[in-house]
Image 1 (spheres, rainbow, N blue to C red):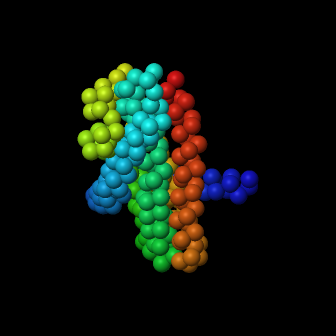
Image 2 (image 1 turned 60 degrees about the vertical axis):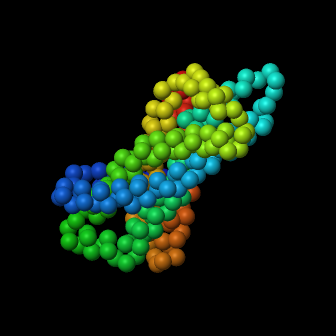
Image 3 (image 1 turned 120 degrees about the horizontal axis):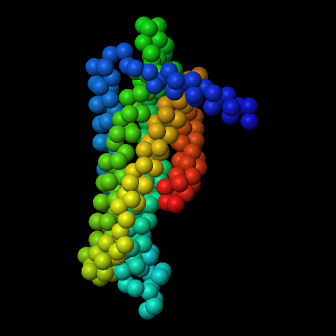
Length: 247
């Protein structure tokens, strides 16, 4: 318990150093643009791929498991849409990104720490936390709504693929189910949740990488701890955010 409180305190202190006005806005925007590409744009491919197949699998599973003469045929499309909007494209996708993006951030900062690059920045009088971490947090929070939108789109295309090629469900029934009782607020719920998750991934991973002590082995441990801790925090916050946003 004491170690957890110490870790929380160190995390809060680091975030306090991070969220200050950048000394050179030009350098900040340069780093911000770089992180947009590295953390956001480079993740679009895996987001589209996974979402496409998950949308297809959800559609197939729903169709096979709730098939009944008493069940309306459009329920498959309706259920697929609700799962993609409310959980997969925000929560589950962020869990996947915690593994890709989180480990990337932790290993990058951890390597800079053990090779004394961060110490060199501090010797030069640079606020290393602000210079290195703030662009990562702002870039990931900026890109997350885009990734969520792409995930929803790819999941629906995957569901249609089962109708076009797999002949699992009639295309008209799927379209009606996707449109049935649609609530625009559910899209905003997914985006709002993903913003919190993006902050958790970027800040927690940055903390574990920034505070590495030791050699290259410790960098690997920090990367693992970052992914595990981010995933657990995402699941806990998902519980409360879902309850709060869907009342």
